[in-house]
Amino acid sequence: MIRIRLKKLDLSYKNHIQSLRALSVLLVFFYHLNFYYFSKGYLGVDIFFVISGFVITQRIYKDLEIHNKIYLINFYIRRVKRIVPNLIFIVSSTYLIYLFFGPPNITLWKDTISAIFGISNLFFLYSNQDYFYNIQNNPLAHTWSLGVEEQFYLIFPFIIYIVFKFFNKKVFFIITILTLLFVISLSSAIYFQNIVPNYIFYFPFFRFWEFCVGSILFLLSDKLNKNKKIFTLTIFVVLGIVLFSDNLQYLTGNIVVVFLSALFITNYKKGFFSNNKYILKLGKISYSFYLWHLPVIYFLDLYLSNKIYLTVFSFFLSYIFSIITYQYIEKFFQEYNYKKFKFYIHIIFLLIILFFTLIYIKYLNENLRSKIRNLIYQTNYLEKNYKWNDRVVFQSIVLNKNKIHDFCTDNSEVFTINQDGLKKECLKHQDYTILFYLEGNSHTAQYVTAFDELEIIKNLYFKSYKTSDEMRISTDEINKLSKKYQKIFYITDVSDVELLNKFKVEIPKINKEIEIILFNSTPFSVNTEPLKCLIKKVDCFNSKDTDWERRDLAKLNTELINLKKKHKNLNVFNSYDILCPEKNCPIYNKEKDILYYIDNNHLSMEGARQLKNGLLTFFKVEYSNLKF
Image (cartoon, rainbow, N blue to C red; front, side, top):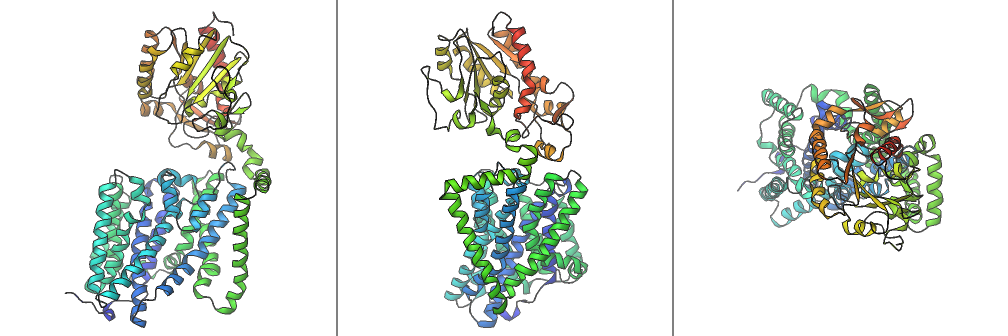
């Protein structure tokens, strides 16, 4: 049986761990700046987890050496003082700044509350927010990692406490238990990585193996060789290959980085990396820097178009803010004395009052909440200067002055039905001549504005379904309506061949007197962020050739042409070429101040209006025998 005496374990302060913290936070910082060469920078968080496992185990053992027992209460007090005050201040500050300078149509309330209570990872998991898609649009998306850490802290000290209480302080048993936890956690992550990838990323159990690696290697640190320069150099080389490689799978990169960083902690001692004062300073304030950097990047990225300026200002502001909060919040609460604390207790008391006041306004006083919301809208920079809600909010699309998002979706609960079985709020009705019946998901909903504003259209109905990859046709309803209206146009959008194939199955069920019009999609983009183009007032375009190749639109259009030849009552409206007549598709036009899109594949209302003239010509030419 292996027995390790506590006095053999190195409990000293380690500069190289601070330097590794600095490296980790820089990797994450450059990843969030969306630099291509730091596409694996998110692995810096995994390094943090290893460091946490190592340092927390060292802290517990230090107490054990001094007092010959584990003080769980003291441990949790230290953790709370280290994490919570800074977290509350920075997250709350971000929330308040967002109210006045962030998009007014999006709230960070739930994100803020979950971050403060250490459950951001679970909030993002169960609200189906993928980190890799969410990170650029949420200044609090990085707080998920703090949730994982805090949940680890709730469990880990109890494991050590129980093992030492019942196994006579034999370190062998704690190593055995941690190794077992490591094996179960890692093997589960490997097994489920392709089944529930979001769980592997956010759920704490699938991350515990990373903390266990740091903890186990601390317990074995006296058995490992140190100061081997070739070995240390090898660690850096392999670490660099992993971080800058495009070929490694997500979990493979995690495993390699975790083990390399753990070995670095236990083997590296002295050198430039551990003695440089600037690196050590960044390592010391790394917790504050980690909390500040994403909100700073988020807000600056809204307004700065120059990547160099964005990088420099983001680092400078994050660094300055971090020094301030480290000195006056983080360090203060770790090293406070009674006289200083007496002053700050009043601030804490005021924060508690403020928190419960916000709860009261948010959930208990609708009238006051509405007044405050309107006041914030009026003072919000984007709303005031860009008419944000009118221009970029998809939920603002109206039909006959009614918001389709409120009345016409699958989830809508408040609406009235007319004698024809149609929702009145989703219908513009003048007579029983020609009815334009639009049905589809959000890619059809985006055309409602163009149809609603066409003077030739007297009767218009929109019906929505939610699932983006679903193709649903209300065949029975439109066939029944065709007996009441002189003519019905059934209109929907098909953005790929798969959807078109689903539509083909339904065509024979549709009354041949009903005219079917298929929109051949709109240009899609991958990297362009239209709303930032609007805020920064810069021209933005999307490559037509790239979109056609990526989505195989040549095949889609060939299929549409063949389908049109087969069915006399089917026609195709070339929405794509009207929106993108040349090689570069406009996303935002600075000179005309036209915002064509609100995201990578949905038109804004002013973008939809660009189709009006094309639609008018289309109906007058293709259906010249009809009187509109």
